[in-house]
Image 1 (cartoon, one colour):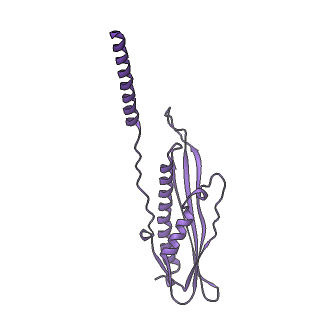
Image 2 (tube, one colour):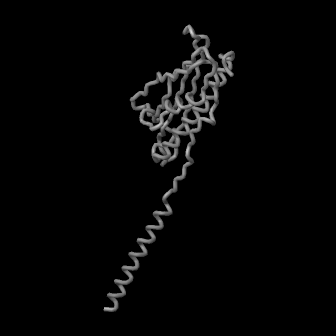
Image 3 (tube, helix red, strand yellow):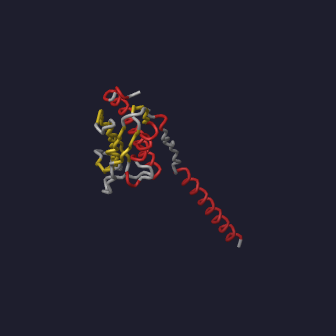
Length: 201
């Protein structure tokens, strides 16, 4: 009887020990994912002032629903970020002329590419992301003649592993969009100063 109780006691304690040990082992193996938030602040991007009475922004870009394009599935796609910057940071002043800005491209493509690796357990492929932003600036006089124009284009790319979390994917995409916005705002300022010098404040 005493032996039976001892066996039962040790068996129960062993099970409790096993459960507690497994719990701590599983917790110690889990990675804690902490990603910095990407801040989209138009105040950090270039500001442009053009001599015109009004500004018109035309979104000529239409998202493609083919498998390689992913911007149509995003909550804040590049075209929205681009339109926000143009609305807030490109200002007009004066009593004549009008400025037309066409958003020609604002796409993100995702493709799977093979990795040349000899590591046995490494991933054999990864995702390649590429963003394209393209703008046309056209300044018209009151007779509807183009008095000045310029085209601005930028392209950025990055990669990621195939098996990443949703938050990691969002972080990568937001960083890609922000870098492209910084590029196109800077290039727009540079090219407009060069090609529309007489109309830039």
